[in-house]
Image (cartoon, rainbow, N blue to C red; front, side):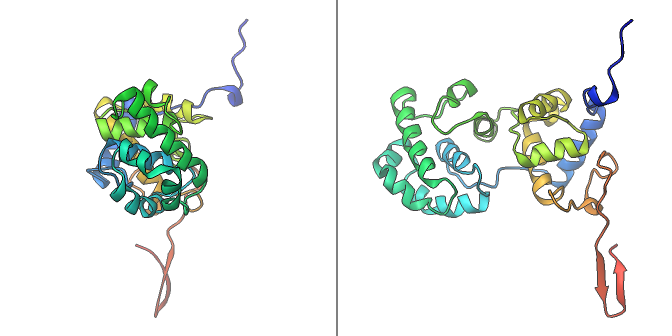
Length: 238
């Protein structure tokens, strides 16, 4: 007799395509044209910006790359700037020494093996110094229009908290999202989820009262609306 797995051992149940479609439909209504908040001018500067954003905020990266990208918009220009030159611009970013080294090594490899062009496939991208699967997926999606989903901390949190695509690791969440995201929404899914996690479904105090998918979300501990104080005393927010 085959014993059924205990509830604790069962794989978490994901949303069906219909429910997932409704989630993305509402997120799309909130942000019709989602895009990365990193500043870039071409696929190469996007690649550099995304690589620099590891363990750093987009705002911080944008401040650091503002002057950097004025001087270096191509691998050749970055290589001419040198490791010390790159480092001088990104000192405000975490792990700047190692990142400067990777940017130069990445630029050299692009010149030597890809004629200075950013490759349009994941296997080639992840071979570049400082480039992992998440960075590759962002570049493929934003620069080349591929329907890839890069799972960062925001997407990992939203996918697990809502029940949209549960998983214990980023790779598991990515695989779940690939299965549950309807084809029409796959290109924008990465941006809708990351922006939703950044501004609404935040880590400490999610803004459940203003969430477009609150009624579809499986998160049990909903955050109540804040109380608004007026001259007449506190009252619930509308």
